[in-house]
Length: 76
Image (cartoon, rainbow, N blue to C red; front, top):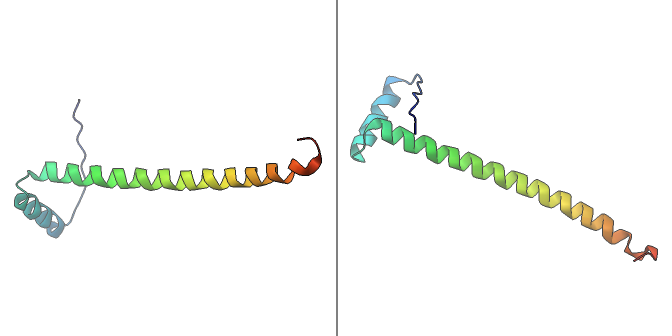
């Protein structure tokens, strides 16, 4: 794995709190932040997959209703 650097600005309060919580977790702050971002990414991807799944399910339900409506046309 090649490492890349991400940089962002944060308030001194946020940085201090993050460093303190990382220390309480016995982790370097970079690992603490990496884990937090990974968890957020996973939540966002899960939410996106849930949204797309619901959208696809609704689309399939409409198509099934349309097919059910034509079963009485004497062809099937």
